Amino acid sequence: MESTPLELATQPLNRRTDAWAVRLVATAASFVLFGLGGLLLWVFLLPVLASLPGGTMARRRRARAAISRAFRLHAWFMQRSGVLTLHIDGVQRLGQPGQMIVANHPSLIDVVFLIGQLRDTNCIVKAGLFRNPCMRGPVRAAQYISNDGSMTMLERAADVLREGQSLLVFPEGTRTTPGCAPVFHRGAAAIALRGARCVTPVFITVEPTTLTKAEPWYRIPDRRVQVRLRVGADIDPADFNTHAPLPVASRRLNDHLHQLFLRELATS
Image (cartoon, rainbow, N blue to C red; front, side, top):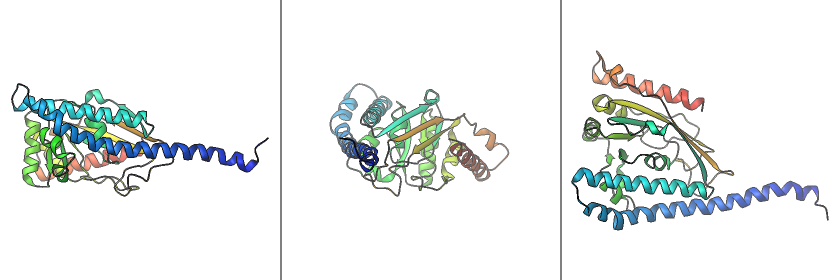
């Protein structure tokens, strides 16, 4: 029996609905696995790694490598389960000594993709993660920096750059509001001018938007999400720090970064 026009018209919708349901379940599973993974790292793996021979630096390096591996596996699960597709361009240029990595923040899981590619990078994270039952163990073991907005935080971030660590920073401080351009706070520029050897931008696009500041986890798009990370050219902070007091230089570098991201994201 031939299908009626109405039946034919509904078939693509049914296939899309089935895919949506699968991705909804996979998204829920991703959140559950993320929380369980954080607890397993804290309770089982990180204590074992901390007990191995070596000083503070060796323990920190092992903890960061474990977190990076866990995040990479999590990104792999989200791809294989159909939640998203991930494209990364230029990641081999990340992780240089004294490098400050600056990224926009369109989605809750941006940090998962970036840390998953970086075995030994510091990161400025939300202060609330140090109280989160699933994440406080890993962020403390990795010696990540709490974004409490204090001058002490700025100096500590500059210190890790001067020590030769690389540092991941989201200058917006929170996720981008959907439909709005990113707005950078000057703190990232101030840190770079105090201690970075170079500043490397990472332009992140998420289409269609998901897990933004205004969206609950279960409000997923009608199609698979496309996530793209593109590493830009290095920026020398000394170019903004010559013959200018630090507040002026910070404003100049912040304005440069802001305009750069606006331009690059508009063409992505």
